[in-house]
Image (tube, rainbow, N blue to C red):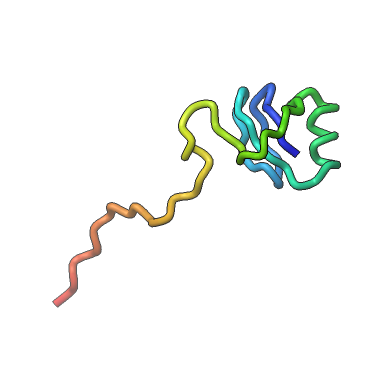
Length: 76
């Protein structure tokens, strides 16, 4: 079910959701709970994926790690 966040919140299923962003939940029960709590509202499903009001990659995980720490020097 496609929803729009009315406030910032965190759940195990959705993780962090920011106000004004559109997101999708798999479980209708979770959707009903979020709507009842006033955290989200249902939006028309246009067949596309959930979008982000700001940066479209904001909720995607990094594909590669960005560890900029240098390896410790080898002891001789």
